[in-house]
Image (cartoon, rainbow, N blue to C red):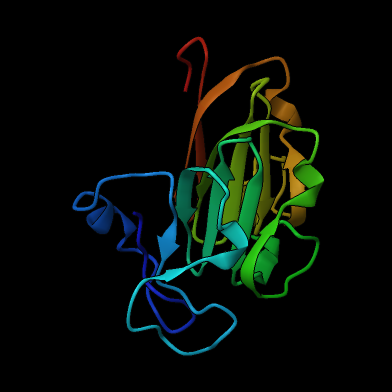
Length: 177
């Protein structure tokens, strides 16, 4: 069982503390505000993910991204700066699949405060959300509300990613950072 804190009005940052105390399973139970805007007093199943195998979860500043065992990506939470990847800046109160990644098998996801990143099985890196400080890797500070492949890394195989609030870092299959 994996838990996180509610949004909006809650803090998403305590996931790692909770994860260290609760064993991982592929069931996903999250403290969140399913379409309600009030805090929940106990863990609540995320109905949109019931029966979906979950392999990874990451939380940013008010948003969550889930990677399924089938390589699909779901996001929800605050949509400011396009960080959810649904083509708009609207908040989503239930998980929605990132449609623009269909056809890709995603193997890793992560979040910064205002952006999200995903690695495809072929090693391509996709980023979206707020582009301040060039953190999306597209050679400028423009944001994107749908996942966009990082062209500067084409020809390299990204094997691991990490996002901070103002940066994204990758490790390639050759160990380059």
